[in-house]
Image: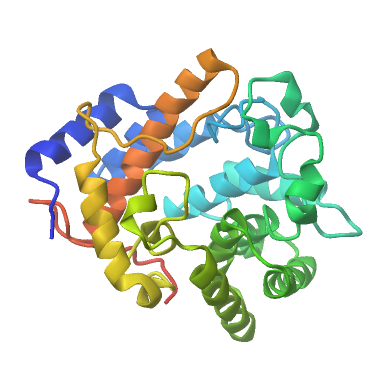
Length: 315
């Protein structure tokens, strides 16, 4: 069983603090060095717009500055992770944005803004056929949006949120999920405030989808596939029991694939906008390096760094 050496951890730390975005650097210092969360929360605020939503390439593949439901959901989940209180201005503004922008008839959110084509972007974010490609937005981004709102449920009207959450669980149950929908559904599965019965139904649907979607052959992990550690990033992850052996092998491979600069790199690339992709790729390296270190620590795979499983997970 491979371990990340102290030297290799130091190289990753230097990349995050010197070569990554301010946000990932601040999150790393909070998670691994005990720095206060306020710096990370402040860094996250740089991506929030006046309408309360988040954009501005917080998701490095979505480079329009306009607010997006997907990106706002990701921001809310980060704010919850960082312990932001319900009355924090970022939280209240983000929740109000999502409440204001939901489709009142279908209870969904458009995944990215209509102006996405006006800025560099990979082909999968092109606006043509977007709704069809993303399953009418019934699971993605809705599952993450609902998860983010449930983390701050006292800020929103409980009546409509409960109805949307139930409708989302039904969609998770009835759709043949793709890999991105599964990841979104897992965020909902771990959300606080999801009723016990709904959680059990969502878990069953996620388990069924994971059996079909998660790649357990190490030979495939250099490509764009759903890897075991992505669905079980911690020992207390809801699907860990399904992939406990594969996750350990996956972590071995990840340790081997750390770059000389200390970073982990994306397994995908854009098919256009070469210059913008280089910037996005660098930003993704910071995101992925922090994510990898968090999983390695959770599984006690870093020399000199005590294991700390995420206490917020729902088993």
